[in-house]
Image (tube, rainbow, N blue to C red; front, side, top):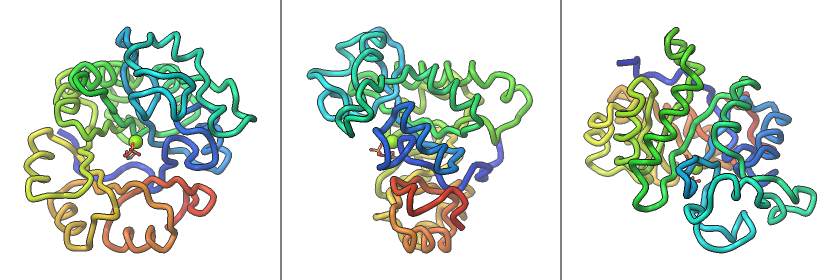
Length: 254
Ligand code: G3P
Ligand code: MG
């Protein structure tokens, strides 16, 4: 449907601002941008009312004060919760972003997005469909113009979420998140018509990197925090990676 290449930036700020700001927040996005990044990865899941929010954990407690699950709260309630104080007092009051507002801001600022669909268990299909439909709506003009380098890339560990995303918005590119690539990685990727494989660099070797590239897929690694390791991965043919250490690995790292 679209060329299996990597037309996107090489280095992405993980969860917005890596380890320099609270993850998956507007402050994180600003921090990444201040470091020169115009490409980020972030995580999205559904609130109780079916509205997607930018969050990594399905439970409150680590990054957001409170207890229970994200899907026990409506998005408006989550947006009023504090997602910054855990990181540092200076970030107190930082809201949980609503996905559509966050994505719109990224787009306005020219920040390319790898949107990780992070469904709560049991909500895989709903999450994939909701995120894909909203992203396709936001990028309708770019999709119509086949301006694919600007269009976000959806990724997920959940094949169900990706299949559902394909059904909701077939024109949006998808990537399979697979921690360690087993014998079935290409079958899974082809079944989902994925353009790229996103994998944990700690389990990747040069032969597997070559196999992914020879298979015609983009190859992305998470989460690479050592410049020497980043250089090795690029030498193996890895197309891109995300990093938490945006202070050590800049957007123009080559
Ligand atoms: O999308 C890459 C990476 O973010 C996947 O793992 O747990 O950091 O969301 P996680
Ligand atoms: Mg992620």
